[in-house]
Every structure is written in C-alpha cells, then in structure tokens.
Amino acid sequence: MELETSVYRPNVAVYDSPDGVEVRGRYDQVFAKILTRDALGFVAELQREFRGHVRYAMECRREAKRRYNSGAVPGFDPSTKFIRDGEWVCASVPPAVADRRVEITGPVERKMIINALNSGAKVFMADFEDALSPSWENLMRGQVNLKDAVDGSITFNDKARNKVYKLNDQVAKLFVRPRGWHLPEAHILIDGEPATGCLVDFGLYFFHNYAKFRQTQGSGFGPFFYLPKMEHSREAKIWNSVFERAEKMAGIERGSIRATVLIETLPAVFQMNEILYELRDHSVGLNCGRWDYIFSYVKTFQAHPDRLLPDRVLVGMGQHFMRSYSDLLIRTCHKRGVHAMGGMAAQIPIRDDPKANEMALDLVKKDKLREVRAGHDGTWAAHPGLIPICMDAFSHMGNNPNQIKSMKRDDASAITEEDLLQIPRGVRTLEGLRLNTRVGIQYLAAWLTGSGSVPLYNLMEDAATAEISRVQNWQWIRYGVELDGDGLGVRVSKELFGRVVEEEMERIEKEVGKDKFKRGMYKEACKMFTKQCTAAELDDFLTLAVYDHIVAHYPINASRL
Ligand SMILES: CC(=O)SCCNC(=O)CCNC(=O)[C@H](O)C(C)(C)COP(=O)(O)OP(=O)(O)OC[C@H]1O[C@@H](n2cnc3c(N)ncnc32)[C@H](O)[C@@H]1OP(=O)(O)O
Ligand SMILES: O=CC(=O)O
Ligand SMILES: [Mg+2]
Image (cartoon, rainbow, N blue to C red; front, side, top):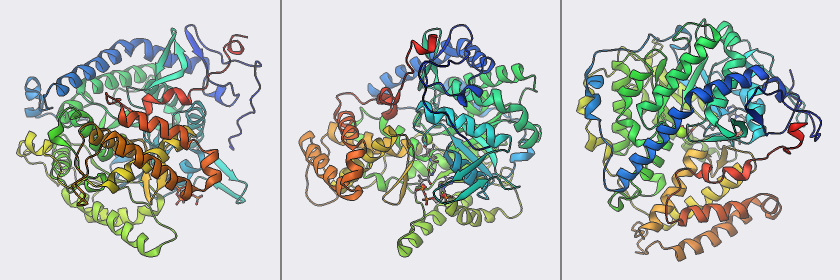
C-alpha cells in the first residue's frame, strides 16, 4: 500500500477518542486508522497505570543530578550487590533473533524502512528516538509505515526517480525504539496532561502489530524493542511492567515481548545487572549506545571542572573509560545469557571522494573488528553501504550466531569504578569549538524542519551526537577552558564563542548556499543553540528544551465538533 495522507481540511473530522483522551494533532484519515478508539484506550490505560511511576523515576533522576552536582560520582549500589553476585540468567534468546551480527538503524520514514528491511542486515531498528524529529507528522506517518511494514504491504513510489520500492522476500527482523522516558507527547492529552511520549510510541505500535508480528517475524515471540536513555533499573522495572500489561491485554504469553536496553548513560553503566534482572523475562541483551554515553559523561559531571572532555573527535572507543564500558557490558550480558551489542561508528559512505571514502570505510572496519574481537555479538550500521564491511568483520564469529557462550564470561569485577570513570585524555582546540558549533546549529536546523538524522561533514549526526556538541561547548564556556591543542593558549569565553558563532554562521551560509540558508531555520537554530551553550544551568536535553517549536496543535474548536 502506498501512503497517501490527506490534505489539511479544518473543522471536518475528529479522532474517535475514549473518555479523558484528547488528540490535538492534525486530523488525517490515514492517521485515524492508527488513532482508533481502542488503540487510544490502550495508551490511556498505560498512561494512567504508569504515570506515577514515571514521575517518581524522573524525580529520582533530578535527585541523583543534585548529588552529582554536589560532588558525588556514580558507582555500584551496595544495596543491590546480591543481584550482581547472584547466579541468575535471563530467559533464553528467541531463535528468530539469535543471530544479530549486523543491525541497521534509521528513522521511521517510509523509504528508509523499506531500504533498511531489504538491506541484508539481520535486524532493522526503526527509530522514534535519536534519529527522529518527533513532530506529529513524523510520529503518525511512522506508525502507519510500521504497520504496513509488519503486514508486508508497504510500498513507496519515488515519482521523481520513477522508482517503486517494495519489500524483498527476505527481510531484516524489526525492532522498534520508542522515545526516552523524559519526552512528552504534547499532541495527545490524557486526563488533561500530555501523554508520555514512549508510551504513545510503544502503545500504538504494539496494539496494531503484535499479532501479525508474532506470526511473520518473531516465530511466536515479539514484538521486539530497543529501550533508550535509562539511568536506573527502576526505569527498566517500569518497562517490564508495561510489557506485562501489554501481554495481558493481548492474551499472549508472559515473556513474549523482548527488548534490548541501550546502556547510554553514565549512571546506567553501574546498573547493568540490575537492569537485566528487572527485565530478565523480557530481555534480549544490552547495547553500547556510545554517543549518548559520551553526552551523559559530560552531563553527569557538569559540576566537575576536573573532568573536562577533550575535542569531541578524540573521544572514541580507544579511551580507557569507553573500552571499560564495552568490556563490562560484554561480560555482564554473557554471564546472563544475552546479546552484548556493539554501537554505531559515525562514518558513512562518501560518494564524491574515493580516497576519503576508503579511509572512512577503513575506520568502520577497524571499529567493527575491535568489537567482534572484544566479544560483542553484533553491531550497528547507520547506512546500507556499510553492511558488507560489518558483516565481514563479524564473520570472525564463524558459523556461530553469536558469542554469548564462547566469549568473556569471566569475572566482571575486574573492571572497577575507576576504570569506568577515568577522565578521557586529549587536547582541546579552537577547531573543536568551531566544529561543535557548526554541527550543533545545522543539526538543530534540520531537526526543527523535520529531519532527525542528517549527514554532516561525512558523518552521521543525530540527537545523541548533537548533544555532545552542545554540552561540550557549554562545559568549555562555563569553565573558561584553555584551548591547549593549537598552541594559542586561548581561553574559551562567551565573547570568543560569540565570534565563533558569527563566523560559523557565515561558513554555513556559504556551504549550504544563500537560498537554502534563507529557507531553512538556521537563524532560529543558531539562537536556540547559542542560548543553550551559554545558559547558567545546563538543560537536561537539547530536544526537550526546543520541543515546543515543533508542536502543532490542531484548532481546539475543530477537535470538539
Ligand atoms: C547515536 C544513535 O542513536 S545511532 C542510531 C540513530 N541514527 C540513525 O539511525 C542514522 C541512520 N542513518 C541515516 O539516517 C542516514 O544514513 C543519513 C541521514 C546519515 C544519511 O542519509 P542519506 O543522505 O540519505 O544517505 P545516502 O544519500 O547516501 O543514501 C543512499 C541510499 O541509502 C538509503 N539509506 C541511507 N541510510 C539508510 C538507513 N539508515 N536505512 C535505510 N536506508 C538508508 C537512502 O534512503 C538512499 O536510498 P535510495 O538510493 O533508494 O534513495
Ligand atoms: O543510541 C545510540 C547512541 O549511541 O546514543
Ligand atoms: Mg542514543
């Protein structure tokens, strides 16, 4: 089926919502097939049952932040030592996803979904999170696209190129990543309050797809999910309860739904066993969400001027704290019988420069070889052009679908708090400040106009990588760091940053061209990015702070007709 959303016709139709649910997003008859009374009722049930737990978990995050801001550092929790020391394992891995050696990721756009499912990767992670700007249109089209993908009918007609896209006979297994717990969904009000974004993403997708998915994709299991940005096992416990609630509603066996948790916050690295324990009936492993993890390192230590990061390009998996994190994740997952997934290399193919392309692909190859040799069971690819390289690196596993039983099940306690917190080494440069600024502004301009992942300077940029640019600038300005890598001995100040912003805006205008610059939201993005980098207090999330700019409420009177 080709997706054809209708043109805007005010005051003509409304979604059929249950009591207490108000849909404020644009009406569309295609969206109405997703926003049915029963599906909205299910989302409302989840919201009502879990909103108190989510609120409490977010308050705990704020409390932890107060502690870190007063000098404390995250560490292992003595009260849950029994979980770390215990000899439990997670439920066995569903055969359908035993082999996850290469997973492609991408936003829930129609053409991307078809390309990703056809890409030859074992898994496609369809993203409502880092790679998606969560506008009403993107979210609802994403739900429609996923429904068509699960029932196998999805097509896309690229009229300009006279090309029709449809699914191959063999497709990747689908995982869906809902938003993080912190993001609201302002277009759906439940009992007068914005719904929790991830419960909308999860609830609508699950409601419409569980039956078909289990038949066609999961061999009796599923649906499968990726869970982002958690900071503590209490948040995993909420997800576990959400899954149990959904399984009960659907009348399917407990443990059918499976999820991989991204370990992508610094506090969560000390909670890996606890997170797996909470989700032990629903887990298929952990993943190294390396970009958010770096962002989280800066955020967690925002009040620790002794822990400043070097240039963003120098904070890679070679840094001791990053290697320790990946090692601990492998040991923990394998001890508990589940996949230890690697992360995303940011390089993408470079079409117009063969030499640069070769170097980029070589970096991806080295990264993937490091992962498979370290013991990871699979990895992420940002682009279909990278899949052969990733596959080749993971052929190191031979005929085995994974390395869960064969690699690194030895004692995780060899990796200490000091290893995990070690300050990354390297220099800081004016070019680092410039690059952060150029990338941050362009990413935000794209996000404000509906694109959550973009190619910039031959790298994949999404919400997680842009966060690093933002918080690093904030940190350098806040502490007036010395740029010690270019021999100038200059200290970063608001004045220096102001000049950098002006010059980088000129450069962006030259690079993208006057027309695109005028049409795009570069000036608005520049204002927002500058405000965030120079704020007295660091905003928790870039996208949360600017979310209001992409909220588009349908006229309230129309929705009451
Ligand atoms: C930190 C994290 O969270 S990582 C996970 C979240 N981030 C992501 O998922 C990013 C995924 N990747 C992307 O979004 C894209 O690759 C980008 C934006 C970086 C680059 O996209 P483009 O500029 O379209 O790349 P390019 O022009 O080379 O694409 C060539 C083809 O590959 C397709 N393609 C590119 N990336 C993907 C992908 N991830 N999945 C499916 N298809 C893809 C394009 O649609 C295009 O298809 P076509 O030839 O049929 O038109
Ligand atoms: O979600 C992945 C990350 O690296 O962040
Ligand atoms: Mg992430």
